[in-house]
Image (tube, rainbow, N blue to C red; front, side, top):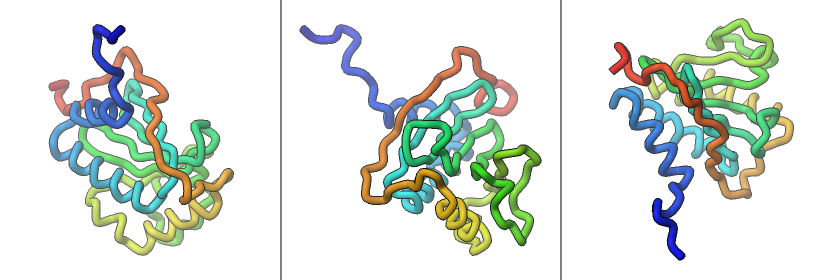
Length: 159
């Protein structure tokens, strides 16, 4: 017997639909950031949270929130790279923003920031401190963790 609604949407296809809700420039920046993170963190499990305020794609060793090392978060006007355990990371250049107890972030004003040696050092240090560590020999995968029924508009001005 076939499924009348059609086959279930893959997690990758579902993530694509979430990304497409943003402006073309934010979507392109996010796709570039995700590609950089996938190349830098092979074997990561990507946990997708389509929340009220933002779309967040977390990179970790497993499906547990406690295993998250980094996140790429999309907002209507920008994309940010979040560092779990950010307050613990050495940041001699003062790149990390925020004042929370566990997370810090960098607003990705330009995707070229990934090539900045100071950002690369933060990523390397985040990976070195990851518990559990991300196993680069494992295949990466995407897991849709939550989709909020109510969400703020994904484009500036509510469009």
